[in-house]
Length: 141
Image (cartoon, rainbow, N blue to C red; front, top):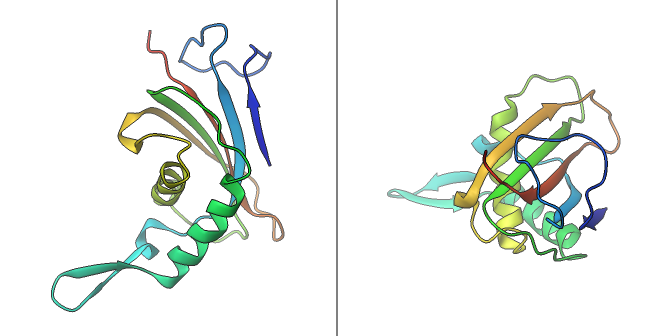
């Protein structure tokens, strides 16, 4: 699910003081792997992406390929994590995969331009766990 809007829709206002006409894009990705499961070391200092991460990235890219919104940097990103179960996890460990997927799909030019991130943990659901997000241009006060 991807939405792209150019209007100033009513709703939650963030600290970015959006200007009229600024772009916002929304979507949802499959439940992301933990940052601890993205890479593994092999041999002498060599690091590769894990099979789990490569498979997740392929699935995420298929979802993100549906649309290619244009949002100007710097970016503001709001993420709502809906986990698949009640198992404990650090919400910050889910960000790296999401940022990498948005960059690879060219939704953002580089994750170094993300100046604002909000992450919230929602109630777990067994079917349909996801990482829903809203991406917009960030305007600091």
